[in-house]
Length: 178
Image (tube, rainbow, N blue to C red):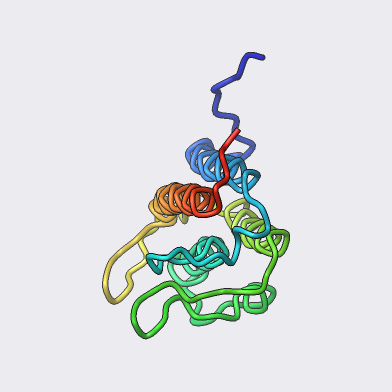
């Protein structure tokens, strides 16, 4: 089967549509990695103390919501339904990702999808001027355009981490990949 490597944008503003497509392509690739996971892998804690796959999946959704609501929309707190989807803080006092245990893969995937729908709903109503309007925060200035770039990069980095954790699980359990 021949693959097509074509950017397909549905946004009325091409400059925004390209970034939304890139974000969705990053998620498509993350979902390909998620499809390789088993339920046993989600809460497995590697011997070296790295985060669990479940904690990383939660973190991806949390960071996407955080950049949407804090940097893009300038809100002090997540509105519903994001607040209910993301009840745990970003990191522990030690600076590690907050451990998230006891949720199955379907719950993590549903959270990722729901947060993405919230982000897309916002960006589908943004115009080019607002997309490039600088938001002045205490530590930095940022545009929604840069936020989408950052979220693509963030997801790719954690997709790699999920793959590494999956491989570590397989090795620890004597699973030979097909």
